[in-house]
Amino acid sequence: MLLEGSCHCGAVRFRVESPEPYPFMYCYCSICRKTAGGGGYAINLGALTNTLEVEGEENLRVYNAKLYDLEATEGIAISEAERNFCGSCGSALWVYDPRWPDLVHPFASAVDTPL
Image (cartoon, rainbow, N blue to C red; front, side, top):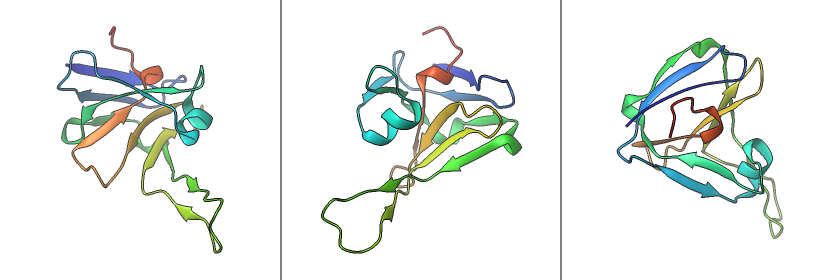
């Protein structure tokens, strides 16, 4: 299934293929809730990294979240996951995690394709 999406201001547009017709996943992690959530969760979609096409790439910014560990005695770890968002309007667009290089997870809020 072809998913097309964009940020709120239109500075970034993307296309990506999903092998699933309804590729929804609810994410309740504290990072997704804070950066892209609504209703106490974010809705991520599963798609294939090698099909991602981006227009307006110069407007993309990446956030690598801090992984707070209450038991840590030194420093704060940084997540490998790259949360891509629009640098102009702040819209959350997708998450890419190099631990699962074949997958990219667009946020449902950024997808314009009727699902």
